Length: 115
Image (cartoon, rainbow, N blue to C red; front, side):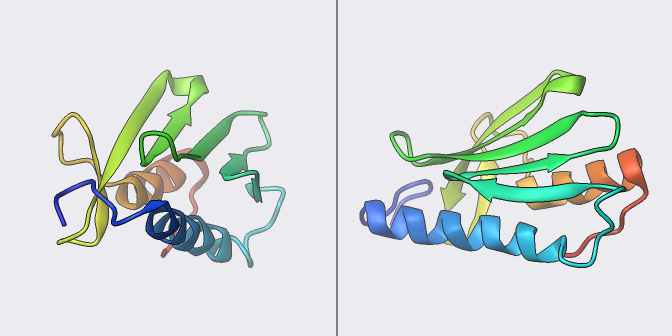
């Protein structure tokens, strides 16, 4: 299977669900006064006390994972690398969403997360 390609939509949805579930589970023990995580309709939102948000969203039409941090003007689109079994930004900058998320959470709220 080529980078970013899935055998079918079911495989894409399975990988996407597993990715969002990993992030959501990591927030099980996080105080909601520090950061609150929820998943609805294929999008995971992390909301911070100051009202800022980080959103990971499923984009089935292009089989991508999108990330947006509006307060920082950051948006990335990720393709899935089936050989490496990880998401990578579609601009070739080597950005992996979970690594980006770990760094962002540490810098913005002091949270040290493992996904």
